[in-house]
Picture 1 (cartoon, rainbow, N blue to C red):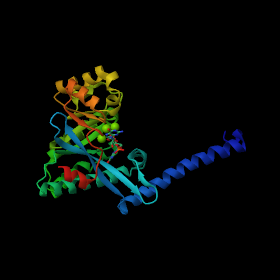
Picture 2: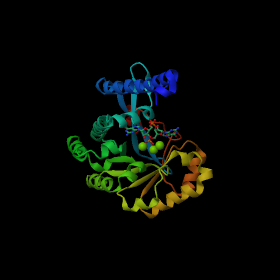
Picture 3: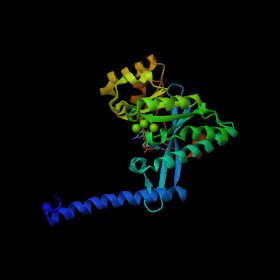
Picture 4: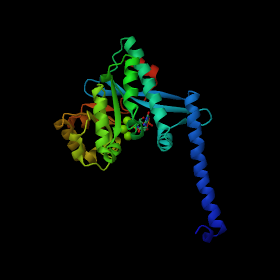
Length: 271
Ligand code: C2E
Ligand code: MG
Ligand code: MG
Ligand code: MG
């Protein structure tokens, strides 16, 4: 079939494919090296109690400063890392970094609230993941209650049973679970009460257009409350959004309006 497409068609198809593949392979091998060369680090975006303005924790977000290309956003390399399986090493790296930081804050007597870490399905379902977490809590003398794992609906829908078993084991370590980017998956809401989840993060897309999404956002908030789940709005950028969220009874928020993700040192300084 390829030959029938003619020499030209074949060539075009081929070079496009390999360009794409080359880019991916290049980035992937760079990512492997990035871990060795310490180009990866963790930033923190504070989370707030809206009305008091208190910091209640932060989300750990990975940053990659490529030696030639400069900063590469996570949305570009996380999917790649997921495909290649490199994500496991990367997320364990983030988890370890966060543990080191928490250990340091604990020693300094800082009240950090709860630090959340994004976890992909690949890592979540690794057999050794629970042991890995437990060992790190012990090694860095960390109480599980200061850690939260953020997972997405996508993860749950595909593997409800086995995911929930894993989430239960994680909860037994005192760690909380939050449902990230909530509302963007095609989930039926019915799974929420069956699932070991503590918190819902309303996706930025709803907050961006909050005036046009009042009914949906309001429904999500009251559902969360009925299920005794915590609720936080993500990607909050304006005062108008903050006011609306207060009106609707959402008491936690995260977003540029309050703070962008900042370095470990900066986060430490504002605690
Ligand atoms: P996410 O987990 O939903 O994280 C929130 C993203 O929204 C972050 O982007 C954050 O910087 C950005 N953000 C927060 N507030 C605002 C705002 O007010 N306005 C705008 N425009 N953006 C806001 P970031 O750091 O680029 O990360 C993007 C995604 O990459 C994350 O989305 C998460 O899915 C993934 N990611 C980042 N770090 C990790 C990691 O360590 N592991 C895994 N598996 N995924 C990660
Ligand atoms: Mg997240
Ligand atoms: Mg999110
Ligand atoms: Mg998001």
